[in-house]
Image 1 (tube, one colour):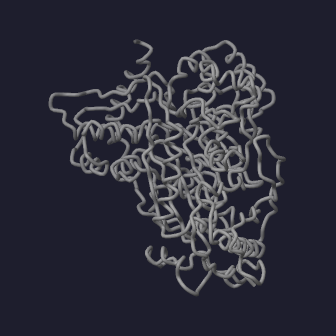
Image 2 (image 1 turned 60 degrees about the vertical axis):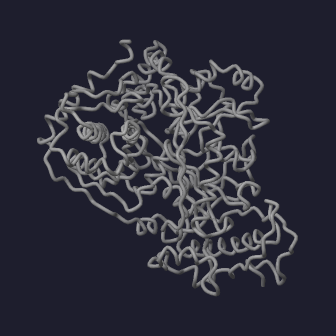
Image 3 (image 1 turned 120 degrees about the vertical axis):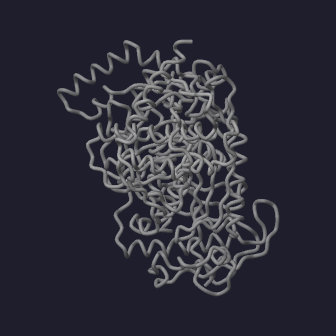
Length: 633
């Protein structure tokens, strides 16, 4: 019997495309075309025995793909020697513990694919995160160890004041480079990747020509402020106030959470909605394409899926859709009333699928192997999944380009007055997990800006610089390059230093910046406690800025809670890989993922709030003086 049980003879030297795999954890569905496909039925609940059988089946299928992909020629046009493919897993091997081999050294793990006789290669999963600052890719083994990594800085464009864009052609070339470099660094072959999960920054969107695939404009970032006048106009409009008041009255009679959410709704520049309206109003080429039915719209996940499959797949997932501002998390569909109100054609919006789903295969010409795309997820929801915040009441701080505070609200969306907004965390079959989120836009942005001013050379230096001082000598920083979000909600606020003196030096400036990050964390946490009536079970942190011990300790002191920082802080990558791994049976369930998570440091409160209170009160004064700044010009 040949590898994968295909027959007695070895595969033909004439290459043939591998069969499309119908992964066992998914419904048996046909590939989605741009026109859409029928809604699949949710998968049945699986017992331990069936999970083991499906994992065994998955490995056998992977053996067949590996055999075909290792033939004498490939789609790239080059020749390669036939590969020896391990035999399919036995039933005993399928029951092996998920942590087997956890003590192996990285060098040994990387060598495993080319080793001789021994246990079959279970493959690897690839997690990718297209963030606001960096594109990262990590190859993971079954112990969730990183075997190979790559990263590229996102090249952000600022064509006008307040405009923030990304060139899609540059982003695409960087994205593909990260995949290839991460796989190469892991010392494995592309066909050994059994599942691909993609996490992306949210609410950054593009439109493109449906026939040619050519884009009409650059990606418009979630940080972009070009629609600020539209936001202000709509939020002050009589029409929106009528909608809000009508929903408020109806809520009194019906107690409908959906009506309550509608009564509290307001637009922000971070929503896709009014930035898309700006595009539809100002770009003639887009207007013409929409009129001809020849325009596609998508956030980064949708566009990458479209490119990876060469136009055969067009979709987004629930986590990404819920961050656009035009999705109804209560009805789990695009908000028809809102799109009609804003004159956004429903035909522009992509189909919405589960977060962990068979989105199709990467076209073989792109990477040389048909890798299954089995997870699309928004970056903060991905970080939540990677942190294993699976229970109601679990909280995580992600401190990257911005700070995002999320709480697991279970199966119910939660809307607040102060600015926490309801999101879909993830949808896997019948399971839907909701989050409530508040954010501060400028965290890593402020540190990167200070670095560009040569206040320090490396970001790692800032912790010691801040700790070398007793205080910031009365200097305060307002982190508002992109306005102020919850609970202040002022897109016209400016970034500023206040309290500067002739004795102020760069150490004081750096400490003031780090203190401002912790103060914004305090504001978000207090609002969450006030407006979301869910007991907090645990708090975890991730993102590049959480490596800063000064910020972490000060945040722990200010909120008077323990904060768990993991060994791996790139949680968006791990979350995407985890969702992909569950989809293909690489990992069994969430309990297995929980066991694989490792904590590095647990920060516990060391100082009382009273010690910080005078400093934070003065910082709040500085914030108030920075608000509505651009309205005064």
